[in-house]
Structure formats: structure tokens, C-alpha cells
Length: 584
Ligand SMILES: Nc1ncnc2c1ncn2[C@@H]1O[C@H](COP(=O)(O)OP(=O)(O)OP(=O)(O)O)[C@@H](O)[C@H]1O
Ligand SMILES: [Mg+2]
Image 1 (tube, protein in one colour):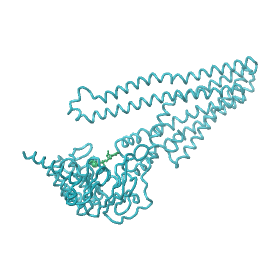
Image 2 (cartoon, helix red, strand yellow):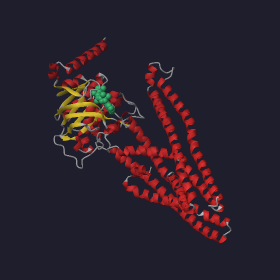
Image 3 (tube, helix red, strand yellow):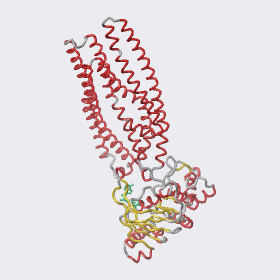
Image 4 (tube, rainbow, N blue to C red):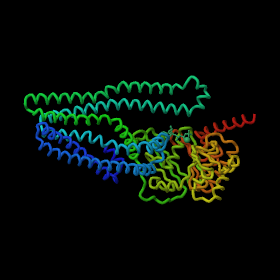
């Protein structure tokens, strides 16, 4: 746990933690010593040596005062550590997350981060202030008592020494049992809440298929599983909880037995025995309590583990100095192999293999290929959401790994299918493309992309809030906003994933117009779904199962009569079909 804490705190704050631990250890030992001083006080009192008792009581009072002082010091230092955690952990997490590859952020990681920023950090801070202290005193105070007993009577001391691992072992075993049950229950809980979310999200689908009255089988199953896990947890926890207390009782009885037989043999003074047993009683309690803290310790450790996992996630290696752009607007993919990072950071199944092509500045390249052939993945690699496993991606003539994220992003505009709209006005959402743009430029970009046409239909015009809590826009409209952002940014290279849904003629006209505007100033790499984009491209790259199958212009590829000709004929037929259906 302390190792987790130092990892989470970072090297800059180790000193604070170290000071706290020293004070805490001193406090625990002092507490043990003051308890041990009871023995001479008691035995002197019982034998009627009032002078000796008074002297020892003086020592005892001194020890208690020192203990009190140390208690205060360690408590203050504990709060200081907690405060440091609260103030630095958010910054550490924020700094680290900003350096992580964009590909790291998906649905689950975002959820994890949210939880971490709120709950976990608080729990870690709290664990320092409230948890470490009972844990350390629970172990160190009894240990001090044992050492003192060894001095006073080595036989009883030895017996106590033998007992302590037993008590600790029983406590640990019981913790482990409880742990296991908690984990099972946790997993069932996570599964069930996932299913509840799914059930809520998929209401439209479920209703469309009339699946609301007879329940949703996966959810029912998950809930039943959770019920079963809870029941099992209750039953299985009982032996775990009893075990710790039972061990303490057994050890205490054994020690009394040892002490009594020693006293009967005359090896120990009965008076001293009573005093020593008082010590033992003080010794067993805290040790068993350590087990009681197990649940809290476990939660804190889990939280620390989660934070640590994020902090240890390798950031994108960035060069000390960003290499300057050599060929503005050029994109080169050279012998690239890539598989999405699986568990444990290893690359999973290969998604792209030996992909090579170049895009000259100010030209249009259309990427086509079946669903799952790797088109989106390729654009993610160009924007360095991930690093390639082999080969090189060059943007502006320079390996993306030799550029800082800022320098790379300055050259790129991304228009992807899943457009995120901020909960802001439309103007605000377009301005994201270039925050310092003046009003005129924003409006011009909006007009080119056809956003002004959307505005005309909105209740509050330009001031309408869109995005999460505001008015929803259709997929085509969202993409228009995203294109307006790209137009405003004016980056030398635009990566565009065209909307898959068939665009209505009006939308189509706006997309065409903005693409014409974009190609006048930028290099365009388009995942093309519209036939006009494909035929108008300077170069078409056909991907098939992660490899470049064909490359060339429309005429060249049609003449090949291969993948591309098939793709084209199918699309054409589908289009003809749709138009025919529309006119009949
Ligand atoms: N985040 C991811 N993690 C793991 N595998 C992924 C991820 N995204 C895509 N894949 C896999 O990589 C392969 C290529 O996917 P990609 O999205 O690049 O295809 P695509 O050509 O864009 O398809 P579509 O035309 O349907 O958009 C697929 O097998 C897909 O399952
Ligand atoms: Mg795709």
C-alpha cells in the first residue's frame, strides 16, 4: 500500500509521506512502551512497594505525554499528506492524460477517468488520514509489547511471539475470504449495471422488435446472477468474519495456560503474571482489529491501483524538439503494419499490413474498401491516435513520431463520422476550429458548409444551443458543422470520413461545395462513400482486408476490372435503384 502511495504521489512529494511514516512509527512504538510500563507499576503496587510504584508511575506519565505529543504530530502530518494528494493527484492525472495517445480514449476509459477524478482521489486522500494510522499501530504496538515481554519473561514473551503470526495469519485468511466474495459480487454488479445501461440505450431497438413485455433476457440473467452472488457472499463471509476473532480467543487462552503452569511451577511470580496477562490483553485486540480494516484498505488499494494504472499507461513518446515540416500538405504511408493494442499493451490482430501510398500536396485521394477493411484505422494512424507497429507515417514529409502533438495537429483537420458537438451555440462549435478567428471568417466557413441554412431553421438562430443538452442535429447536419470547423481552421491536410448514410440532394450539394472549397487550399484524404467524390479524386486507394488492393485513377481502375470495378458497379446499381424507387 505504501508502495502504491509513493507511486501515486510521485517523487516530488515522497518527503512528506516519509515524515508522516516516521512520526507514525514513533507513535506506535511509544504507545507500546507506555502500555508495557503498566507491568512494573502493577507488580510494584501488588507487592506493596509504593515507592517503586510512584517512580514507575512517573515514567508512565512521561511516556503517555510523549505518546500524546506524537499522536498529535502524526495526525497533523497525515492530514498534510492527504492535502498533498488532493492537490497534486488531479494535476498529475490531468498532465498525464493530456499526453496519452488519442486512441486510448474510448467509452470505457472515459467512464473510468470520470470515476477516478471524483471518487478515487478522495478515497486515496482519506485513506492516508484515517487508515494508515490504525494499521501501523495495530501491528507495531503489539510488536513493541512482545519485545518488552521478552525482556520481562522470555518464556511468556516467546509464547506471545508464537501466537502473533497465528493471529495475523487468521486475520489475513479471513480478509482473503472476504476479498474473494467481494470481487465476485463486484463483477456481478458491474455486469448488471452494464446491462441496465444497454437496456435503456437500446429501448428504440427493443421496442421496434416488440421485446418490451417479455423482458430483456440478458438483463434478467445478469440481475439473477447478481442476486445469487450477493446471497453467496453473505453465506461465505460468515466463516471469514468468525475466523479472526476465534484465533484471538484461542491464543489468549493458550497464553493464560502457559502463564498459569509457569506460576504453578514457581517460575513466575503470580503477581507479575497478572500484570503480564494485562499486557497480553492489550496486545491481541489491536492485532485483530487490523483485519477489520481490511475492507477499507482493499477499497483504497483498488482506487490506488486504478489511478496507478492510468499514471503508468505509457504516454505517446514525443521528441524533445519537433522536426520542422519539409513538404507542407504531403502525406506518406510507407509499409505500415498495425494491430489495435490488446490487453497488456501487446498488439492484437493485424488490421493493416504493408500499406503504402503517397498523397501529394493539394490533391484529393479517395479511400474505398469494404466495411472493416481498415479505412478509419488508416486515418487514425495518420493523426497518430496510435503508433504503427512497423513502417512509417509521414505528415508534411516528416515522421509523425518526430513531431510534437501540437505541430502534427496544426497540419491536420479531422472530419470524422462521430462528430462531437459541445454544449454551446453553433458559432461556438464552429469556432473550435480556430478560437481566435474573427466573426467574418466564422460566418464565411458556416456559409460554405451550409450551416447558415441549418441556422435559418433553428428557433433562436445562431444563438441556439446545440450538442448534449441543446437541440439535436441530424448526422448530415453535424458533419456540416464539422466541415465548417475544418474550413475555418484552414489546415494544410484534411482527413474526412464521409457520412455513410445516403445524403439528401441538399446535403449533398453543401458537402460538394465545401469539399471544392477545401481542395482549393488543402490536401484531402477522403474515406469516400459518394461516387462523385471517388470519380473526382486524383487518386483512389482501394483497401481490401487491410492491404492496398489497387491504386490509380477512376479510369485506370475501371480498366483493371478488379475490386474497384466491382465496388463501382455495386454502388451504381444501388444508386440507380434508389433513384428509380424515388421517382416511381
Ligand atoms: N478501437 C478498435 N479496437 C480494436 N479493433 C478495432 C477498433 N476499431 C476498429 N477495429 C477493427 O479494425 C478493423 C478495421 O476497422 P476500420 O474501422 O478501420 O474499418 P473501416 O474500413 O473504416 O470500416 P467501415 O467502412 O465500416 O467504417 C475491423 O476489423 C475492426 O473490427
Ligand atoms: Mg470506418
